[in-house]
Length: 181
Ligand SMILES: [Zn+2]
Ligand SMILES: [Zn+2]
Image (tube, rainbow, N blue to C red):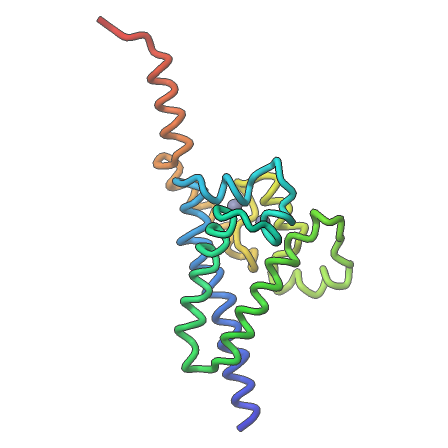
C-alpha cells in the first residue's frame, strides 16, 4: 500500500516536471522567443545579473515572465492531483529548486564532476547548460530537460519566417528602399 502510494507520488512528480517542461517550452518559451518581447526584455536582459532577474527581482514584468513560464507546470500539477497530491506538490517544489539552481552560474558556482556524471545520462539541464541559453538565446531550450532543445530549435527554424525578427528586418528593408514614382 505504502509502496504503491510512493509509486503514484513519484509518477505525479515526474509528470509535472516532464510534461510541464514540454508545455512551458513549446507553449511559452519558444513563442516568446519567436513573436514576443516580454521574456527577451526580462530573462535575457544582458544589463542585469540573471541571478537577480530569475530569482530575487520583484520587477512586475520579470515576475509576469516567471508566472507565465510557471503556469504550464501549475496546470499539469492540477491535472495530476487525483493521482497523488503530495507528488504533484513535490514536482512543483523540485521545479522551483531547479529554477534557483540553474541560475547559480552567475554566482560563480560550478557543478561538481560527480553531479555532472550523475545528471548527464538523465538529460537534466545543468546550470552551465542554462548559462549557454543566457549567452546565446538561440540555443539550449528546455528548462529542466535537454531533450527538448533539438525539437524546440527545429520548430523555431520552421517558424522563423513568421518571427518578429524577420518581420522587423523586412520592415527595415522596405524603409531603406527609395520610393518609386
Ligand atoms: Zn534563465
Ligand atoms: Zn529564453
